[in-house]
Length: 126
Image (cartoon, rainbow, N blue to C red; front, side, top):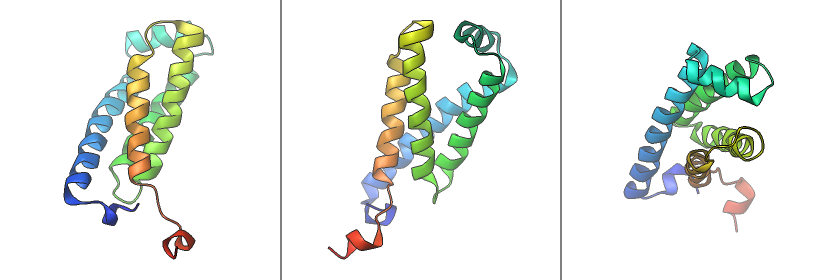
């Protein structure tokens, strides 16, 4: 279903979720890139180095930019969903703590990607 195929109410809901996700991921990505002490500690616990904090922060910020671009929201939702799969796995396997926030953000990101998924030309004919 393309954005044009959504009703006005559906478009507003999807935009509301996109804005909520942009605020959450913008804050998280910005904290990672700015070197917030809590983020440094989390990535020390992960154990692969601080370069991974920068990479994760950059991916989150890029996801926000894609999410807010009207024609690229699908890709932003997809990127952030994949990022949260990694976040849930990291909580469950490496650092502990509750994976619920990452699960919620991942599900909301997947919802946006699903609602904005492009329809191929061949499936429109059927």
